[in-house]
Length: 90
Image (cartoon, rainbow, N blue to C red; front, side):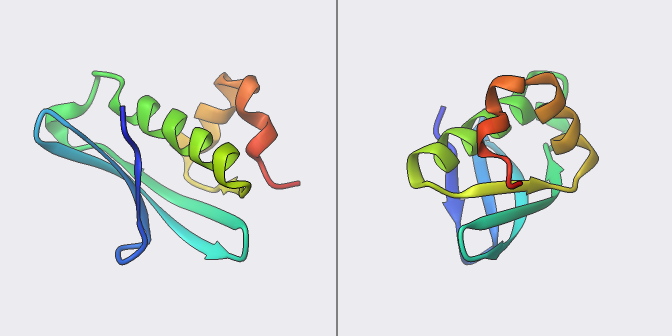
Protein backbone atom coordinates (compact mmCIF):
# COMPACT_ATOMS: atom_id res chain seq x y z
CA UNK A 1 0.00 0.00 0.00
CA UNK A 2 1.40 3.34 -0.97
CA UNK A 3 -0.66 6.45 -0.36
CA UNK A 4 0.80 9.50 -2.07
CA UNK A 5 0.19 13.19 -1.60
CA UNK A 6 -0.65 14.89 -4.90
CA UNK A 7 -0.31 18.57 -3.96
CA UNK A 8 -1.08 19.75 -7.51
CA UNK A 9 -4.59 18.29 -7.18
CA UNK A 10 -4.86 18.83 -3.39
CA UNK A 11 -5.53 15.19 -2.68
CA UNK A 12 -4.11 11.97 -1.27
CA UNK A 13 -4.20 9.04 -3.69
CA UNK A 14 -4.08 5.26 -3.58
CA UNK A 15 -3.91 3.31 -6.84
CA UNK A 16 -5.03 -0.31 -6.88
CA UNK A 17 -5.94 -2.52 -9.84
CA UNK A 18 -5.19 0.38 -12.20
CA UNK A 19 -7.74 2.72 -10.59
CA UNK A 20 -7.17 5.56 -8.13
CA UNK A 21 -9.09 6.27 -4.94
CA UNK A 22 -8.54 9.71 -3.47
CA UNK A 23 -9.26 12.04 -0.59
CA UNK A 24 -9.32 15.75 -1.39
CA UNK A 25 -7.92 18.17 1.16
CA UNK A 26 -7.54 21.81 2.11
CA UNK A 27 -4.29 22.56 3.87
CA UNK A 28 -3.73 25.27 6.47
CA UNK A 29 -0.19 24.94 7.80
CA UNK A 30 0.10 21.50 9.36
CA UNK A 31 -3.66 20.81 9.34
CA UNK A 32 -5.35 18.96 6.48
CA UNK A 33 -9.15 19.15 6.24
CA UNK A 34 -10.57 16.20 4.28
CA UNK A 35 -13.96 17.12 2.76
CA UNK A 36 -14.28 14.25 0.27
CA UNK A 37 -13.17 10.63 -0.09
CA UNK A 38 -13.93 8.73 -3.28
CA UNK A 39 -13.19 5.28 -4.68
CA UNK A 40 -13.92 4.40 -8.30
CA UNK A 41 -16.81 1.98 -8.79
CA UNK A 42 -14.37 -0.83 -9.69
CA UNK A 43 -12.72 -0.52 -6.25
CA UNK A 44 -15.82 -0.13 -4.08
CA UNK A 45 -16.50 -2.85 -1.57
CA UNK A 46 -12.86 -4.01 -1.62
CA UNK A 47 -11.55 -1.99 1.31
CA UNK A 48 -9.62 0.46 -0.85
CA UNK A 49 -11.06 3.58 0.78
CA UNK A 50 -10.19 2.17 4.21
CA UNK A 51 -6.62 1.48 3.11
CA UNK A 52 -6.48 5.02 1.74
CA UNK A 53 -7.52 6.42 5.12
CA UNK A 54 -5.05 4.16 6.92
CA UNK A 55 -2.30 5.46 4.66
CA UNK A 56 -3.32 9.07 5.24
CA UNK A 57 -3.14 8.52 9.01
CA UNK A 58 0.32 6.94 8.60
CA UNK A 59 1.52 9.90 6.52
CA UNK A 60 0.16 12.31 9.13
CA UNK A 61 2.12 10.53 11.87
CA UNK A 62 5.30 10.35 9.82
CA UNK A 63 5.16 13.97 8.70
CA UNK A 64 3.75 15.51 11.88
CA UNK A 65 0.52 16.99 10.61
CA UNK A 66 -3.06 16.77 11.86
CA UNK A 67 -6.32 15.90 10.13
CA UNK A 68 -9.83 17.36 10.31
CA UNK A 69 -12.26 14.95 8.62
CA UNK A 70 -15.43 16.61 7.32
CA UNK A 71 -16.37 13.94 4.77
CA UNK A 72 -18.93 11.53 6.26
CA UNK A 73 -16.83 8.53 5.22
CA UNK A 74 -13.66 9.96 6.78
CA UNK A 75 -15.52 10.82 9.99
CA UNK A 76 -16.94 7.28 10.18
CA UNK A 77 -13.52 5.76 9.47
CA UNK A 78 -11.94 7.63 12.38
CA UNK A 79 -14.80 6.54 14.67
CA UNK A 80 -14.14 2.91 13.70
CA UNK A 81 -10.37 3.31 14.21
CA UNK A 82 -9.77 4.90 17.62
CA UNK A 83 -6.08 3.97 17.29
CA UNK A 84 -5.82 6.71 14.63
CA UNK A 85 -7.28 9.50 16.77
CA UNK A 86 -3.77 10.73 17.58
CA UNK A 87 -3.62 12.39 14.15
CA UNK A 88 -6.89 14.30 14.56
CA UNK A 89 -6.64 18.04 15.09
CA UNK A 90 -8.00 19.19 18.46
